[in-house]
Amino acid sequence: QVQLVESGGGLVQPGGSLRLSCRSSGGISTDDTMGWYRKEQRELVATITGDLDTGILRTKYRDSVKGRFTISRDIPKNTVYLEMNSLRPEDTAVYYCTLTQGGNEYWGQGAQVTVSS
Image (cartoon, rainbow, N blue to C red; front, side, top):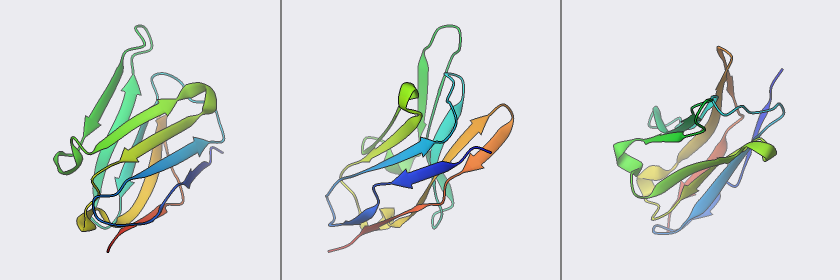
């Protein structure tokens, strides 16, 4: 059973930055899709996947976070990251890491991000 463990949440002032990390207990393949979902807004904010043949990565972002959030991953470390800049109070949420692998979907336990002065 694959487990996803998130870290990096916390309290930050508006305009600040945070980086979330999510490590999978299993291996990650180039063509697996990983993403970040935030509960309160009920939206998938970012995903990353790759082409197994070419290795080309594709990322997608919700309009509300474009230009502020960056998703990336380190396959040897089985880890996906979400770099969040210019944070706003409306970004406050529990952020869940997701992994779609071999037709199965896995979720992390969630990381609280609070943006407040």
